[in-house]
Amino acid sequence: MRRFGGVPPIVTVLVVIASIVAASLVAWFLWTSTRSATQQPVLEVTNAYASCTGSTCAVSFTVRNVGALQITSITLEEISCETTSGPSTLTPNLSCPPSGQAASCRVTFSATINDGASCTARLRVDPGSSRVALGFKVVRP
Image (cartoon, rainbow, N blue to C red):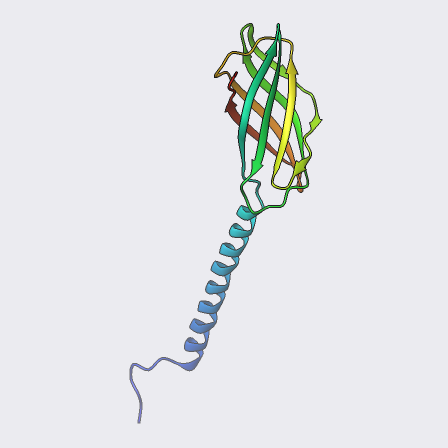
């Protein structure tokens, strides 16, 4: 007696194998994309202020790590701020040693910085030597 409409066993095995391979590829993609996302530094700038004496201003700010990545060092490679004489850029290559999940940086400009001036800091964050640009505004007390 002949059966009609049945699926051969080899086709069933091939479909199951293809399903397992597809599920494995999806799981691998999700794992690698999540892993790379959690290995990126998530930083915020707080306590940004400028203290001026005459025509010299010191900009102080705190970089706070709000991500899961443990940061071992932060280097301030470049900082640019709006001054009364136009944009001013410094390349101090200054280390801002982290204390827990925060690091404090201080840079001196030979120009006057107004209250609410915009600044951009370019940082190198270890581990991984990721380069990050952070924009912030300074308060002048």
